Amino acid sequence: MRKSFLFLDTITNKVDAKGRVSLPSDYRAIVKELSTEIVCYRSLTAPCIEGCLEELLEKLATDIENSTDFFSETQDDLTNLIFGDAKRFTFDSTGRIVLTEKLLKHAEIKENAVFVGKGRKFQIWSEENWLKEEARIREKIKLSRPTLKTKEGE
Amino acid sequence: MRKSFLFLDTITNKVDAKGRVSLPSDYRAIVKELSTEIVCYRSLTAPCIEGCLEELLEKLATDIENSTDFFSETQDDLTNLIFGDAKRFTFDSTGRIVLTEKLLKHAEIKENAVFVGKGRKFQIWSEENWLKEEARIREKIKLSRPTLKTKEGE
DNA sequence: TGGTATAACATGGTATTTTATGGGAATCAA
DNA sequence: TTGATTCCCATAAAATACCATGTTATACCA
View 1: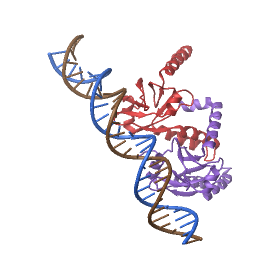
View 2: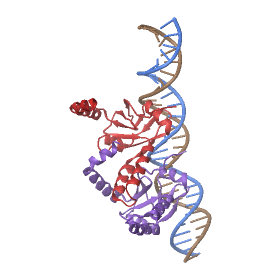
View 3: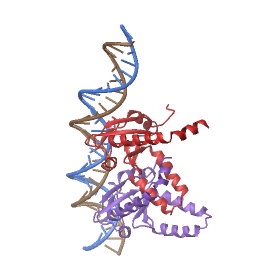
View 4: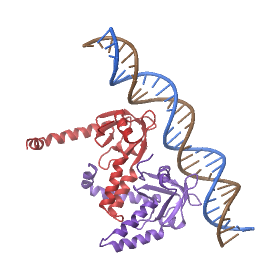
């Protein structure tokens, strides 16, 4: 029995002419524990696809409902965007999902899809965009390294 | 039943052509109590590999979720960096894990891997780098000894 | 304490299983 | 019927589990 449900690692898989991609086996194992499908939507802030279990969106919905935050109205708007965009995907017996044109176009994915674990969710990038994004993040982290060191050392 | 779950001691094991290394038996005993797998990732601050139990990352995921909101940019970057890099490793019946090229390269490990206990987590170094690091730490301690003495006498 | 028997471990090699991925058949919709 | 989508099968490659052996460490006994 599995105790934890984190999407980890970075895996590159091919996208064929029909838009089919293998969901990394690790991810599949996690999904299968709780469900038979994942939810994907266009990232609001980056040229990539976001994926997660439906229960995470449930949690998001609940959080928004309970929020008395000053910015809750903005969050509400953002939530609408996500829920309006999100779509369920099931995988076939070989573990593949079929991504839609809309999603692939937004992420600028052609040949290869890069799955990047993010804990409770994951992202799907094109190779080029992911390279750029990873470089950007590492550069940013370098500048805030002291803070991280503290966090890391906990 | 085991009472403590700390990774201790420093052990050197061989890495074969396939990247296989025996996890020190002490470490294995600890891991087996709670799980069947460990998680490894490139250290953000040093040329070494870090390893821990998945529950530590779970805790981190929860902490990040609670300290920042769903749409936070910091959360986004942090989760990409940490979870995107981390990978699960299970050991076979003889207690070995297979380290990836990415990890070995980052730590500059060739022939031998040095496992260094760090309590809740552990690190894996190349012999050369660990020698340097150990010397650096001991030097640092020497300089701060007066402070320690003062603290002791409080 | 010293010597020997026993068990545990690290490590090399091999066999088996998973997984990704291409192609094609079946199903559904227009 | 035609085009598109879903499902299933086949295969090659890669990941993983298993077996065997030498070595080291541990336990046992004199």
